[in-house]
Image 1 (cartoon, helix red, strand yellow):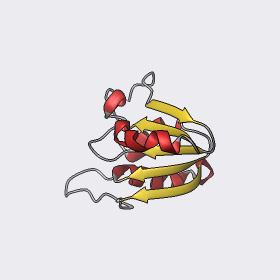
Image 2 (cartoon, rainbow, N blue to C red; image 1 turned 120 degrees about the vertical axis):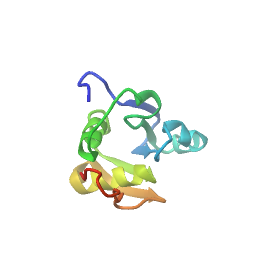
Image 3 (cartoon, rainbow, N blue to C red; image 1 turned 180 degrees about the vertical axis):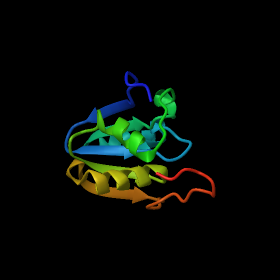
Image 4 (cartoon, rainbow, N blue to C red; image 1 turned 45 degrees about the vertical axis):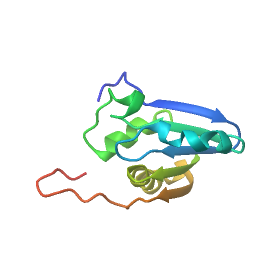
Length: 122
């Protein structure tokens, strides 16, 4: 992962910090239908995960590396809402960095992605 490359964030609204983390094969635009309503009550932080959308140039070798890239510019403490892969990432952050997560919401996600035989485990 390049040390100069930063994960793309879009921030809108005011109020408590709410981080929206998209799922596999998506980008932050997947939340566009609900961001304006949420922004009436929250400061909404929408991320393009490394490898996706405006963060497509950022690579990672492990879940830990991906999370480290996210936390550089993520709010210090927020509600984290993750969908699918995003839920797995948000759950990992809540487990490893509990001070960064005030509340955790997951949609259609699993606590672990099981690798196929022969793939490296994180």
